[in-house]
Length: 302
Image (cartoon, rainbow, N blue to C red; front, side, top):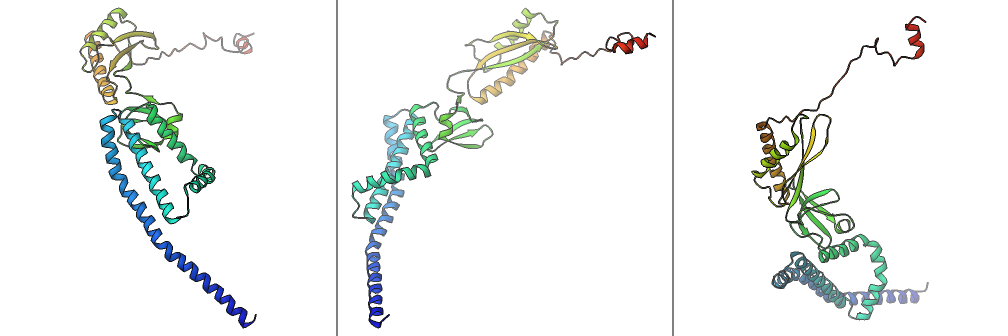
């Protein structure tokens, strides 16, 4: 390569580096401004959250819908801030270009973040449909506890053991939900067995009277005493009573009911029997019908 060609090549490289440096210098203020916009967006979500929360408390009485309004406002702030930052970094980018870019990238983003979008949409549907609300006690996917938070991505419950469980909204939305506290009262079915010598009519009266003095058992709906079957060692009763639906009340009142029923049975001299098994011993020489015929013939001398 001739010295002239080398000189021209170096000059082209120099001009390219100068253009890159010039573009970088021009882009630095825009980049700094874009970072400032994103930082302002991050800090701005806090007052927006408080403002929307205070406003929604005045006009929206449902706590779940207030949560949805706050979360949508935060998402809207982030979307707006991100678009402004993109316009600052790329000043030639028009709204149509942004829409086109979003359209082209939506498929790739959808495949990459399908679980996130699925949880997002499920969270919005849960907040709108309201199958349960904050502080409800639910059972979902084998987890039972009190609903602490319903966010756009997940539902958080506090178990009765004081543990937090975070369940993706897509699982909550597509699986059966057992809402324990939806209604104002809840029934408990408690089994008890009494001796076969127990007079059944009197037993029902005694058990019903014992339930009238138990604190926490509701009078309406009334208590029911059902005879449900003949067990191996006892006649089986089911005591059906109603309480407040919260787990703590159900658990505490069940203990009181068991104490009251046991005390009533003791006073009425009703026996709550242990499981009984009868074992019979046979004289094998007398009852030999299980022997083969050949053995029987040999035993009889034939």
